[in-house]
Amino acid sequence: MTDLTQFTQALIEAHRTRSRFDPEGMALPATRAEARALQADVMATLGPVAGYKIGAQDEEVVTFAPIPQARTHPSGATVTARDRLAVELEVGFELVAPLPDGPLPEALQAYFRPRVALELVDTRLTGARASDPVLKLADFQLNEGLILGTGPENWDGQDFTTVTAQMTANDTTVVEGPITIPGGSALTSLRRCLRTLDALGRRLDPGQVVITGSLCGVPWFDKGTEVNTRIEGLGTAAVTID
Image (cartoon, rainbow, N blue to C red; front, top):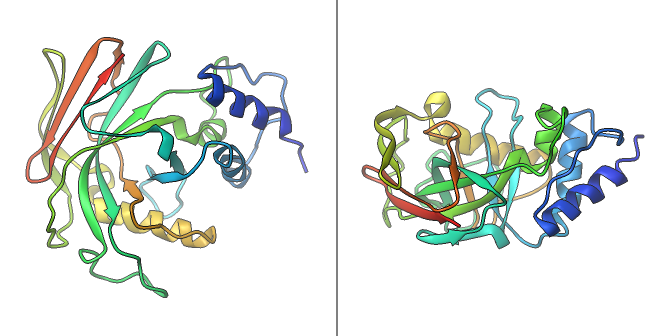
């Protein structure tokens, strides 16, 4: 078995010091399973989990990653960037009641509340290997945090497939108009995340959130940018990058 201690400790230190490092020359994870095990080792040093991101649009989940509670903020928060930061507008689902044991219920409205979510994106890696898919997965699929926006108190369980959304950065419109949810169904992504958790022997706890993929690509913003977003019928979320 490959000894991944050096790479794991370098990732932990990068999280602690908010820095980046070049993994060249280190023993590195070669499989998704190794990357997920490494995620857990790093997450153990960061505190509680606020939720999970999922980005794959097929039955094999490749972008499943935890989101630290310590980096989860309410809408309107100011967050500090290393230099710049990407912000992704997404549909999120907050678990509001414990899921029952056994198969996942067909109707989820009694258990989840949809919310506007902004995923903060950055990397701890530099160099030629920084874009390696397995290393990106080990690096929480580049998750840097989460902004939780508003959402309806009562949800009828209807899926989100195409939404009308808007994102502005200071005075610039980034996206505006109808947008298809990644994979065509936010509920499908939610269910895939829950199945992945189950396969890993984990469960989603009340208060945790699943985010379901970017509606706006991966736009990067400089310090001093105020990002405001809206999804019609769902709510709003905002963040300022410092």
